[in-house]
Length: 183
Image (tube, rainbow, N blue to C red; front, top):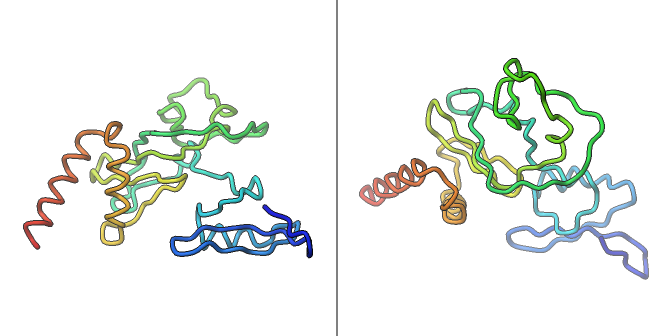
């Protein structure tokens, strides 16, 4: 956040694919939800703690495969950040991905520890339909096959090739070969 000396207006800068945009804001940060919705994860200046919200382990308690509705999804983490301490926590209802098991199978949970971590890069995998969904810059991208960004996924696969399960890499190579034959 920058203060402009003449007018003392606070400016938030947002990097979009084609431009760098600036938004004036007041001290209540009322425009932040707008920026987060229309420019997810593009904020350069971290203005408010509300923007430090990435994918939490506890979100896995409600995520299911959008294609076959399978629950729970397998989670493979490539990068996790410890961001802040939380005092009041709520236990997961069905599945705890921090411990990797269903709640009724766990005798002890470390919910306070779980709340401090945010998954910034990783992979969600559906064991039933064998689809995978990347977690890129704190956001799980769970789109149907026809709406997926192939270039972005190729960059993701290249970046995390060493940590990805071999089945996913092989399946993607087979898919690329099929597409080349069709062309």
